[in-house]
Length: 366
Image 1 (cartoon, helix red, strand yellow):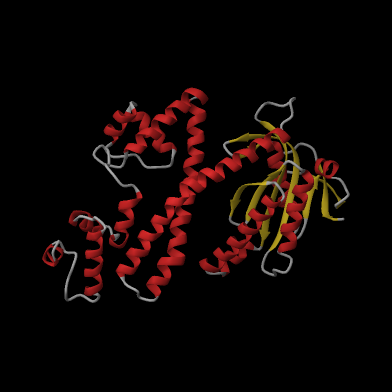
Image 2: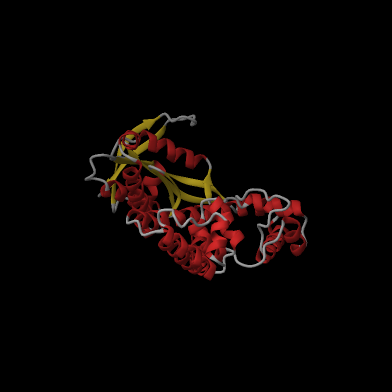
């Protein structure tokens, strides 16, 4: 491919600032296997420095919806339904979005339908899709903040950015194996927790757990005062602390929403320890103060989440707590014991959605 061809395609202007760097980028892209048409298309979308990475992200032949459906021996409408469940937009009839590997994946999902049922399998795929979408966006954000940002700030040029982009995507090749290994470990843990939390007298998907909510009082005010980067640092600190604290005590983070964490633990004493530890770790922070609530009882376990009155109760109790206070229900007090903790009566409180006042206690270290 010649310089004249680059000029004719509108990819290169020898008189433009940074022309030497642009030419080096184009020649490097050719060496990576990029065609002139691919470079023109990437330029049109403002992604020329990411083209080499794009080419290795999903290499090989690309198929249309009709072609991947034929390879998977499935109806195109069924492929689209599965794809939508993963959180991906519908494919145009002529778009070449699929690979041969996609056909195998869709066929395996269809096998799961036979075993688990159509509706439950689709819901499970939605959980997979939303989780992987978060992982993908986290990877992109990781690159932007820690690789692309510094390159742009020191004006290293397009070629340096393109090379970094390619190396980053090559590094992602380790993720599938890592995810598979971590998934197996989490499967073992989930099965162990289920066996410990399930009672025979309850339905098969109902477990006895302690549900906890902890949030940061003052977060809303701070969100109006801090810039997005400072606010993001605070949220990252809270999420990291919550995640590590819960995992270290054999609990599970169900969801993190900005300034609030929902977690569950089979052992009520572990749940108390988690909530109190989060309070203690933010004790020296004048800007935000944690508070929380714990409730124990049967919960329905579905799609990686928990449902039922005990979840609503824990949330309502957390809303009642004042800063630096953990309120718990009588069931938590009865089963957590007083060896490591003390529980001061906090009265009977009327809670929205509950017919009778609920007896609450304030939890503290013994």
